[in-house]
Image (cartoon, rainbow, N blue to C red):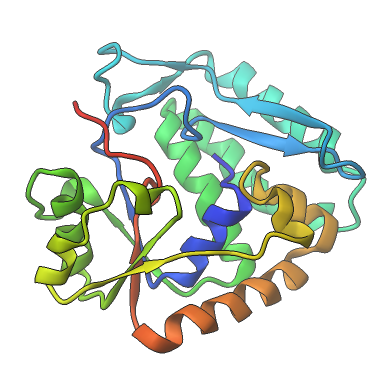
Length: 243
Protein backbone atom coordinates (compact mmCIF):
# COMPACT_ATOMS: atom_id res chain seq x y z
CA UNK A 1 0.00 0.00 0.00
CA UNK A 2 1.41 3.40 -1.04
CA UNK A 3 4.81 1.83 -1.85
CA UNK A 4 8.09 2.91 -0.40
CA UNK A 5 10.21 5.23 -2.54
CA UNK A 6 12.68 2.42 -3.31
CA UNK A 7 9.88 0.17 -4.53
CA UNK A 8 8.32 2.94 -6.59
CA UNK A 9 11.69 3.72 -8.17
CA UNK A 10 12.17 0.09 -9.16
CA UNK A 11 8.69 -0.10 -10.65
CA UNK A 12 9.22 3.18 -12.50
CA UNK A 13 12.43 1.81 -14.03
CA UNK A 14 10.73 -1.37 -15.26
CA UNK A 15 8.71 -1.79 -18.43
CA UNK A 16 6.41 -4.30 -16.73
CA UNK A 17 4.92 -4.57 -13.28
CA UNK A 18 3.68 -8.08 -12.58
CA UNK A 19 1.25 -8.04 -9.67
CA UNK A 20 1.72 -11.18 -7.58
CA UNK A 21 -1.87 -11.82 -6.57
CA UNK A 22 -1.56 -15.57 -6.00
CA UNK A 23 1.05 -15.72 -3.25
CA UNK A 24 0.43 -15.90 0.48
CA UNK A 25 -0.53 -12.71 2.28
CA UNK A 26 2.11 -11.64 4.81
CA UNK A 27 0.98 -9.52 7.73
CA UNK A 28 4.42 -8.13 8.52
CA UNK A 29 5.02 -7.01 4.96
CA UNK A 30 3.86 -3.83 3.20
CA UNK A 31 0.89 -5.41 1.43
CA UNK A 32 -1.64 -3.72 3.70
CA UNK A 33 0.32 -0.93 5.33
CA UNK A 34 2.58 2.05 4.72
CA UNK A 35 4.86 4.05 6.99
CA UNK A 36 4.13 7.77 6.85
CA UNK A 37 6.80 10.32 7.71
CA UNK A 38 6.15 13.76 9.15
CA UNK A 39 6.20 16.49 6.53
CA UNK A 40 8.85 18.49 8.40
CA UNK A 41 10.46 15.57 10.17
CA UNK A 42 10.73 12.19 8.37
CA UNK A 43 11.91 10.63 11.61
CA UNK A 44 8.42 11.20 13.04
CA UNK A 45 6.75 8.11 11.67
CA UNK A 46 3.36 6.45 11.88
CA UNK A 47 1.94 3.31 10.36
CA UNK A 48 -1.07 3.55 8.08
CA UNK A 49 -2.64 0.09 8.14
CA UNK A 50 -5.66 -1.43 6.41
CA UNK A 51 -7.34 -3.76 8.92
CA UNK A 52 -7.34 -7.05 7.06
CA UNK A 53 -9.15 -10.36 7.58
CA UNK A 54 -7.74 -13.59 6.14
CA UNK A 55 -10.70 -15.90 5.34
CA UNK A 56 -8.47 -18.98 5.09
CA UNK A 57 -6.14 -18.08 7.90
CA UNK A 58 -2.42 -17.88 7.31
CA UNK A 59 -2.50 -19.61 3.87
CA UNK A 60 -4.85 -16.92 2.48
CA UNK A 61 -3.66 -15.56 -0.85
CA UNK A 62 -3.20 -11.84 -1.36
CA UNK A 63 -6.14 -11.66 -3.75
CA UNK A 64 -8.45 -13.24 -1.14
CA UNK A 65 -7.64 -10.94 1.79
CA UNK A 66 -10.57 -8.71 2.76
CA UNK A 67 -10.82 -5.37 4.54
CA UNK A 68 -12.33 -5.34 8.01
CA UNK A 69 -14.97 -2.56 8.10
CA UNK A 70 -14.11 -0.83 4.77
CA UNK A 71 -15.94 2.44 5.52
CA UNK A 72 -14.13 3.25 8.80
CA UNK A 73 -10.86 2.11 7.23
CA UNK A 74 -11.44 4.50 4.34
CA UNK A 75 -12.16 7.42 6.67
CA UNK A 76 -9.10 6.73 8.80
CA UNK A 77 -6.87 6.50 5.71
CA UNK A 78 -8.17 9.79 4.35
CA UNK A 79 -7.73 11.46 7.73
CA UNK A 80 -4.16 10.27 8.29
CA UNK A 81 -3.05 11.30 4.81
CA UNK A 82 -4.49 14.78 5.23
CA UNK A 83 -3.03 15.04 8.75
CA UNK A 84 0.47 14.21 7.53
CA UNK A 85 0.54 15.93 4.16
CA UNK A 86 -2.34 18.40 4.00
CA UNK A 87 0.03 21.30 4.65
CA UNK A 88 2.23 20.40 1.69
CA UNK A 89 2.23 22.85 -1.23
CA UNK A 90 1.74 19.77 -3.40
CA UNK A 91 -1.28 18.47 -1.49
CA UNK A 92 -3.73 19.33 -4.24
CA UNK A 93 -2.04 16.93 -6.69
CA UNK A 94 -1.66 14.26 -4.03
CA UNK A 95 -5.27 14.56 -2.87
CA UNK A 96 -6.48 14.13 -6.44
CA UNK A 97 -4.32 11.03 -6.85
CA UNK A 98 -5.55 9.57 -3.56
CA UNK A 99 -9.25 9.71 -4.50
CA UNK A 100 -9.22 6.48 -6.57
CA UNK A 101 -7.47 4.76 -3.67
CA UNK A 102 -10.21 5.76 -1.27
CA UNK A 103 -12.81 4.61 -3.82
CA UNK A 104 -11.10 1.20 -3.97
CA UNK A 105 -12.10 0.55 -0.34
CA UNK A 106 -15.63 -0.12 -1.61
CA UNK A 107 -14.35 -3.34 -3.22
CA UNK A 108 -13.70 -4.75 0.24
CA UNK A 109 -10.41 -6.18 -1.02
CA UNK A 110 -7.08 -5.22 0.50
CA UNK A 111 -5.25 -6.13 -2.72
CA UNK A 112 -7.39 -3.73 -4.74
CA UNK A 113 -6.47 -0.82 -2.49
CA UNK A 114 -2.78 -1.76 -2.54
CA UNK A 115 -2.69 -2.08 -6.33
CA UNK A 116 -4.54 1.18 -6.95
CA UNK A 117 -2.38 3.04 -4.43
CA UNK A 118 0.70 2.03 -6.40
CA UNK A 119 -0.79 2.68 -9.82
CA UNK A 120 -1.93 6.23 -8.97
CA UNK A 121 1.59 7.18 -7.88
CA UNK A 122 3.08 5.71 -11.05
CA UNK A 123 0.53 7.60 -13.12
CA UNK A 124 1.29 10.80 -11.21
CA UNK A 125 4.95 10.42 -12.16
CA UNK A 126 4.25 9.58 -15.80
CA UNK A 127 5.16 5.88 -15.87
CA UNK A 128 4.63 4.36 -19.33
CA UNK A 129 4.90 0.68 -18.43
CA UNK A 130 2.38 -2.16 -18.48
CA UNK A 131 0.73 -4.11 -15.66
CA UNK A 132 0.19 -7.87 -15.72
CA UNK A 133 -1.23 -10.28 -13.13
CA UNK A 134 0.72 -13.38 -12.13
CA UNK A 135 -2.32 -15.67 -11.74
CA UNK A 136 -3.12 -15.15 -15.43
CA UNK A 137 0.37 -16.01 -16.67
CA UNK A 138 2.00 -19.41 -17.24
CA UNK A 139 4.80 -20.16 -14.79
CA UNK A 140 6.33 -23.24 -13.20
CA UNK A 141 6.45 -23.67 -9.41
CA UNK A 142 9.57 -22.83 -7.49
CA UNK A 143 10.69 -19.47 -6.17
CA UNK A 144 13.31 -18.40 -8.72
CA UNK A 145 12.01 -20.57 -11.57
CA UNK A 146 8.61 -18.93 -11.32
CA UNK A 147 10.03 -15.41 -11.34
CA UNK A 148 12.16 -16.27 -14.37
CA UNK A 149 9.12 -17.67 -16.19
CA UNK A 150 7.09 -14.56 -15.43
CA UNK A 151 9.89 -12.36 -16.70
CA UNK A 152 10.20 -14.46 -19.86
CA UNK A 153 6.51 -14.02 -20.66
CA UNK A 154 7.13 -10.30 -21.18
CA UNK A 155 10.17 -10.82 -23.37
CA UNK A 156 12.33 -9.19 -20.72
CA UNK A 157 16.07 -8.91 -21.14
CA UNK A 158 16.63 -8.18 -17.47
CA UNK A 159 15.03 -8.77 -14.09
CA UNK A 160 15.41 -5.94 -11.60
CA UNK A 161 16.28 -7.40 -8.22
CA UNK A 162 16.50 -5.53 -4.94
CA UNK A 163 19.39 -6.04 -2.54
CA UNK A 164 17.24 -8.28 -0.34
CA UNK A 165 16.22 -10.44 -3.26
CA UNK A 166 19.83 -10.95 -4.29
CA UNK A 167 20.40 -12.95 -1.10
CA UNK A 168 18.01 -15.74 -2.12
CA UNK A 169 17.51 -15.51 -5.88
CA UNK A 170 18.97 -18.32 -7.97
CA UNK A 171 20.19 -16.76 -11.23
CA UNK A 172 20.34 -20.10 -13.09
CA UNK A 173 16.67 -20.13 -14.27
CA UNK A 174 17.12 -16.60 -15.60
CA UNK A 175 20.38 -17.43 -17.35
CA UNK A 176 18.67 -20.41 -19.00
CA UNK A 177 16.20 -17.99 -20.59
CA UNK A 178 18.80 -15.34 -21.50
CA UNK A 179 17.53 -12.93 -18.86
CA UNK A 180 20.07 -10.92 -16.89
CA UNK A 181 19.55 -10.41 -13.15
CA UNK A 182 20.21 -6.72 -12.61
CA UNK A 183 20.90 -5.66 -8.99
CA UNK A 184 18.85 -2.54 -8.27
CA UNK A 185 20.79 -0.18 -6.04
CA UNK A 186 19.84 3.36 -5.14
CA UNK A 187 21.62 6.38 -3.63
CA UNK A 188 21.60 6.54 0.16
CA UNK A 189 21.53 10.30 0.68
CA UNK A 190 18.85 12.97 0.41
CA UNK A 191 15.34 11.66 -0.09
CA UNK A 192 16.77 8.17 -0.56
CA UNK A 193 18.08 7.98 3.00
CA UNK A 194 14.58 7.05 4.20
CA UNK A 195 13.46 5.47 0.94
CA UNK A 196 13.39 1.91 2.26
CA UNK A 197 11.32 2.85 5.30
CA UNK A 198 8.85 5.56 4.31
CA UNK A 199 6.08 5.56 1.75
CA UNK A 200 6.92 7.52 -1.39
CA UNK A 201 4.13 9.88 -0.36
CA UNK A 202 6.60 11.67 1.91
CA UNK A 203 9.01 12.52 -0.93
CA UNK A 204 6.11 13.53 -3.18
CA UNK A 205 4.74 15.83 -0.48
CA UNK A 206 8.13 17.43 0.20
CA UNK A 207 9.43 17.82 -3.36
CA UNK A 208 6.37 17.44 -5.54
CA UNK A 209 5.64 14.99 -8.38
CA UNK A 210 7.73 16.87 -10.95
CA UNK A 211 10.93 16.85 -8.89
CA UNK A 212 10.52 13.23 -7.79
CA UNK A 213 9.69 12.22 -11.35
CA UNK A 214 12.88 13.84 -12.63
CA UNK A 215 14.95 11.82 -10.17
CA UNK A 216 13.25 8.58 -11.12
CA UNK A 217 13.62 9.23 -14.84
CA UNK A 218 17.35 9.79 -14.40
CA UNK A 219 17.64 6.47 -12.56
CA UNK A 220 15.59 4.69 -15.22
CA UNK A 221 17.93 5.83 -17.98
CA UNK A 222 20.92 4.46 -16.09
CA UNK A 223 19.32 1.04 -15.69
CA UNK A 224 17.50 0.72 -19.00
CA UNK A 225 20.37 1.68 -21.29
CA UNK A 226 22.33 -1.59 -20.91
CA UNK A 227 19.26 -3.86 -21.16
CA UNK A 228 16.55 -2.15 -23.18
CA UNK A 229 13.72 -3.95 -21.42
CA UNK A 230 13.14 -4.78 -17.77
CA UNK A 231 10.63 -6.62 -15.67
CA UNK A 232 9.88 -6.35 -11.97
CA UNK A 233 7.56 -8.16 -9.60
CA UNK A 234 6.66 -6.28 -6.42
CA UNK A 235 7.77 -8.95 -3.96
CA UNK A 236 11.13 -9.71 -5.56
CA UNK A 237 12.91 -8.50 -2.44
CA UNK A 238 11.03 -11.05 -0.33
CA UNK A 239 10.84 -14.85 -0.69
CA UNK A 240 7.68 -16.12 -2.35
CA UNK A 241 5.62 -17.60 0.44
CA UNK A 242 4.35 -21.17 0.37
CA UNK A 243 0.63 -21.53 0.15
